[in-house]
Image 1 (cartoon, rainbow, N blue to C red):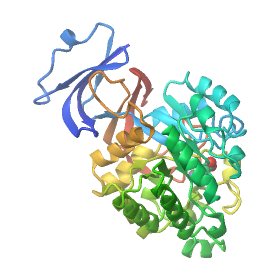
Image 2 (spheres, rainbow, N blue to C red; image 1 turned 180 degrees about the vertical axis):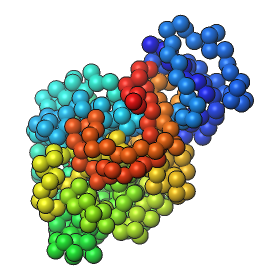
Image 3 (cartoon, protein in one colour; image 1 turned 60 degrees about the vertical axis):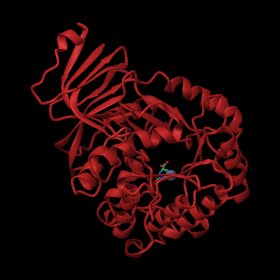
Image 4 (cartoon, protein in one colour; image 1 turned 90 degrees about the vertical axis):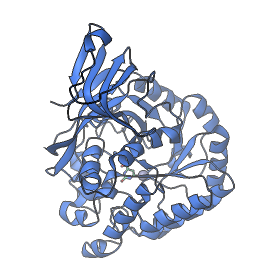
Length: 434
Ligand code: DOR
Ligand code: ZN
């Protein structure tokens, strides 16, 4: 199947290309990028395109490199009542994602070759690119490192104990050394249990109102500072996951200025909402690390704008209806994210003038590609045709049913502006908006 996209606004954030024009996709590859002087300066499609070409009218749409999510939970194996790799991949496609990195906190944990081999085999058959991280420690128990070398040989894209931190300093040092040697990312969930109180709700006004101990910012930033310090002399591809606190942003800014090697992620939900959402939506707004204050949210936006934070990642964390209908103190933390990411970002950051479109797209494409060293996240001649077409002005109401198996998002019923219309992965249409 060949595809010709007519008259779109084509943005390649990596090269700051931002043109009106056409894209020709043939045999899975971008074969033509034609700039138009004006809307009616039609290139002769018949001359360019082969006969069996689908023509997509791109008028009013933006063509961007397909999004890359470095932080998703597809719950496969073992927790597939929440999500599985097939529904997870459909949710990704519906959200404009053409590459997703899955976390290792499955059942069993992805800490050995058997689990990893089986997953990678099944993931390689999916319509979008799904990469798999393995865990840093066996069983996510924080006691013994996995055999990272073997796991890398078997295809692990990186390492993470996401969901829990690596508390043991010496073990983390060893892990960083190994990951630097193997030249793979190591992604850390930073919440120190010794300082945590109760996870999922920010410590302060809201946790007090709910009579919970709450999760203080210091549980995050103190651990981040420890790990930045350890990595100073090691220089591993350290990735700080879902940054939530203003002090963490400041610590990352200082670390980068000092030349410490570090990448970091922020989620659309932490950029869009504050702890008040917990008062309105209860368990659905419970997430680790928690949504925090407006001052924190502003610091995250400023950090993303000035390059302190590199990547927007969803932390797509599906849970069942039954689990999320429990009271806020016992419901599991996490919310789905793949299908609402673009809408949240465009509504809450672009439409408000706080972030430019090119910066948002960079953080969804080139920056995550760089962390994993992927030849993706670009629109370029000869490159694989992973492309998303979206309408930045199209309004839609977040539904209560998704391509994901799960619907645990606090944004159901909200109006968002910005909608994915087509997702194209390896030259094939893998999602089209009905
Ligand atoms: O809220 C969260 N849920 N945070 C995490 O880091 C893990 C995730 C999950 O796996 O449900
Ligand atoms: Zn996490």
